[in-house]
Image (cartoon, rainbow, N blue to C red):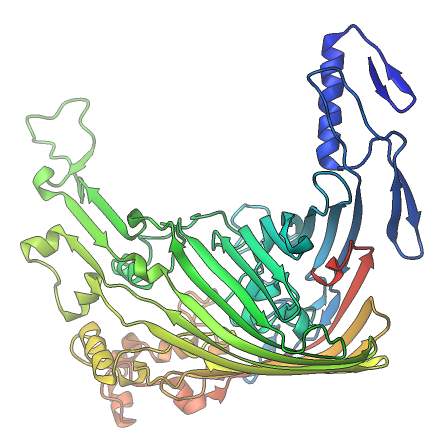
Length: 619
């Protein structure tokens, strides 16, 4: 007999009894509350006030014995609705935003629903869990389905749901102030779950991501285990995780696209270490809080860091071998006496002695990049509607490199490299590249009016206008010129030399209307400009708008004018302009205008539902 409250179930059918027990167990894992729990819902506050159980325990026939712990569950969420304005860029093109959120018109880049639970009594007292669902477009906003790996897009790019977070938080010491967290969870560099979160200090995630996230140094989350601790004068959140973020499985792209893009692409990839790894990353934020528990004035000195693939990486990740027994196929000779009905129409041009083989070897060091920095924040709060915050930080990125080589049959017999430009097909070595960024931000609220601003300056890779931190070439001017000359048959292109002057400058500024604690609306503008490694401003020119062919098969008119084919066809005209060799003519020198990535926006944040404890701001 099974008794639940006043309900009696009796059956001689063993199958029914086992099936009923199985359903009870599933229900227990789904919602760890007293059976027959009744919810009392407060519609004004949108939260579950209490959960009352009819029976205190459930007694099942041996060996089934379950001890149900009292707990509390709730749901909450956040929406980021907005409107992205479309303007024209410096050369007259319609300028849909190239940065976040990569769309135009009305947008909803975030729609999160959180389900949270906290145990109140029993052996699982103070254990907490969270499951969060989010939505995104199948192939990424603005991609036009070009990067849809799963085939869901089909030129419609519909929003799809995905699992954003799913973790269990277990208190281990200090009355719950020290805990372990397991599962898909927040990256501490993005949004630490200790007292001090750099994202919460920025406070305008709906407008722009936190500084380290915008710099491309951290994912929003990862799968792993964290140690979290809060104290009066210090706090920390340390995490060991896969390192691939939440969009990919561990080591999903170890050899992805390894042999595409030309013969020297594998050598470059091994040298740069830009593929996934089986290794684990170690990241965290350690915070010093000199003001202690002072609620009105708070000063925090925070030290974020990350070390990629500090353990667990495998040597096979940087070693690759291939062999082709049939380098080239030729039609069979109809006069060959050995032909028969089973002979294919084409056969290999040579036997085993002519097999084509290659061996690539790199170093794990190239996959062990690391970042570190400091961010100091001061916050003053008189009340929820009267407060301001100012923060400043600096971060360093060390992009480590390792020598990579290629050995093949052509190299062994001496037929390769054919010329100096082919040297890079067989060896790549670079010193570590260093990136540096500094940023400052501030925001305030007085009543229903507020404002925010952030300015960032940092090194950039080849003058890219994406606002991400890039490394500066560590090789000397002479070393770079030598390599460049080898790649161009002895003629160095000095414009390609990195003088360490590549910088980007990013600013976001706006005003906020605080309708309530749950709803705020901001109007603002973001802008990115950049200089290339040679010190020249990144430019665009109107000739880039003119396609060379109906389907841009030949690129743009600007690209064609810079090509060697056009140079040799019009060598006299180019010589009269002072250009004596291909590659010297640059359309930007004649028609270029400084490139500016600017976006005007209207973005909002709306919280809904009721959250458990202090988790409300940790979305």
